[in-house]
Amino acid sequence: QVQLVESGGGSVQAGESLRLSCVHSSKYREHRTCLAWFRQAPGKEREGVATINTVRGSTYSADSVDGRFIISQDIAKNIVYLQMNSLQPEDTAMYYCAADSSPYGDICRALLDTGAMNYWGQGTQVTVSS
Image (cartoon, rainbow, N blue to C red; front, side, top):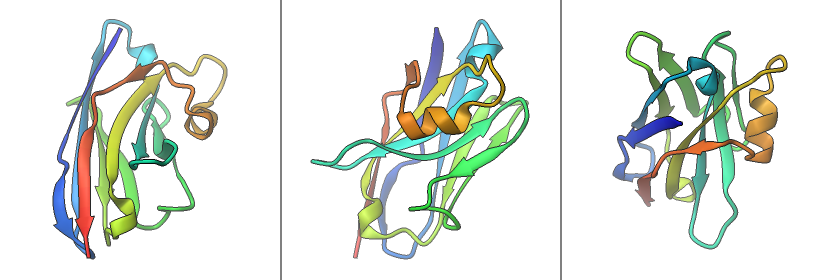
């Protein structure tokens, strides 16, 4: 099992920034090789936002947020961050942290694209008003 605890959500005005945090833990670290952020707005499908390979440090962000959202990690603290800049009302959603292993090369991007990750946090709400 992987434990994922998100925090940092809130209500902001358009143009402002937020930083989300995901504290992750598990008995076997390889189950947390791929850490990712997803979001889901009411009435919309879940969308992969960004992912990081916690071993290689490689990152990938979706085109919809590329350049505004940055994923990073603090290896010592087992925290993955999502820095969100220039927030817009369309970024309003519940944001989820997710994790999975990557046993065959780096499949983190594929997991982000498909949403097929095994472990999920409870989510943190982000609301952006205009």
